[in-house]
Length: 189
Image (tube, rainbow, N blue to C red; front, side, top):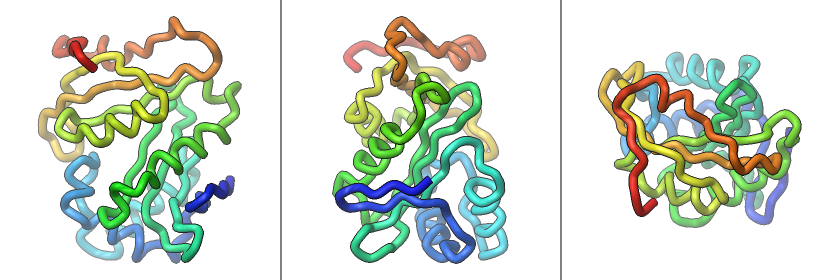
């Protein structure tokens, strides 16, 4: 899948994207909210790139590139598996320009509703800017749950958002609610 937007090109990753991918993954501020540890060298970075984007990704997994230069500035993916999880990451120098909303919105429009009748997304409560992206994409807050995050192995309170795409506005995604007794519906979100 390849998508063009006003400012961006979304395309599959290639092994040649490793330096840009490493720059994103090795930024402590970006990696702080990612589930995996920062790759410490190119071999670890290439392994992660293969696992996440090159070797038969689950669903659609795309590099976010500036249309004017072709520079890889991030990634966005929508998993085809049960949760239809929408995930994303962006190089810190590209924060605050609206690129993530532009990229994620374009991917959402391109996904067949029959294959992706809904999407979920989660964010660490300590990363409210990610939640703001979800809200701007039209996703609605469902609940907050506690998870022992792996492989980093520390507790994280996640907020789950949902976007119903097939008209079923009564749908709820309760998997994480049911997996833990530590959950709540926060008010004011």
